[in-house]
Length: 304
Image 1 (tube, rainbow, N blue to C red):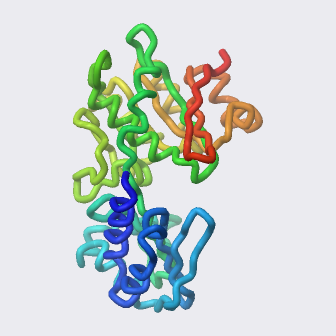
Image 2 (image 1 turned 60 degrees about the vertical axis):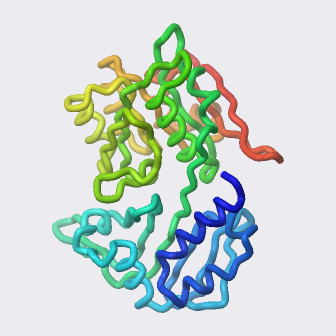
C-alpha cells in the first residue's frame, strides 16, 4: 500500500469519530496518518493515536457522550441491530474497520448481554497488504497436498494481516495452485471484518466466513455444512480449540492458524501449545520477523 493510500485509510477510520474528535484526528501529518495503527478514546482523557513508537495524545479530551455518538455512527444509527457484537465488546464497521468497546457489562445468569456506560473505545485501522503472501502460498503444499501451517509472531507482529492475504491467495489460486475452498472461522471479526453479511476485506472468491463464532463451535459446524478443503482461524488460545482442530485434521481437512509466539521454542515452553505439537496436527511454522526494512518470513518444519 502506497503512503497516500495508507493516509487515506486513516482518514476513513477518523470519519467514524464524532465531529469534534474527528477534526483533531485529521490534524496529523500525512506521514503520521500513514503509520497510525489505532485511534483510542477514553472518557475524560485525551484522544490518542497509536503509532509504532507509542500513543500520541491529541489536544482534545473525550467526553462520555462522544463514546455513545461513536457507536451510533459505527452502527449507522442502528445500534439495536449490533447487539450481538456489542455484548462481545466490538463493532464491525463498513469499510473494514473494527471498533473495540469497554464499559459496564450487563450480566444475566452469568452471561454478558450488553454493554452500557461506555468508558473507552478503540478503532483498529486494518490495512490490507495484498501480495505479501503470494510467494509463500505455494510453499505450503507438498505433492499437491496442503501442509497444516501455524503462523507465529509476538503480539502486533502482523499475524492477522498475513493470515488474511494467505487466505486470499489460497482461495483465489494461481499458477500451479488451484483455488481452495476455505472456511474462515472469524471469531473476533478481525480477518474478514464482515458487515451485514459482506466481508469488508478481500478474503478470496472461494472463502466462506463464519463470523463471531467461537472456534471450538465453528470448526464442527463448517465441517458438517461447508465441505472445506482448508479451515482457517486466528489466534488459538484455549484447549477447546485444539480439540476441534484434532477433529478437523482427522477428517482430512487442512488447517491454517495463528498463535502468539516468537518461535517454536516458545511453543514448547507452554503446556497448551506443547500439546499442539505433540499431537502432530501441524507440519509447518511460518514465523514473522521484524527487520530494519520491514517484515520478513521464515518457514520451518515442526518436529514430528
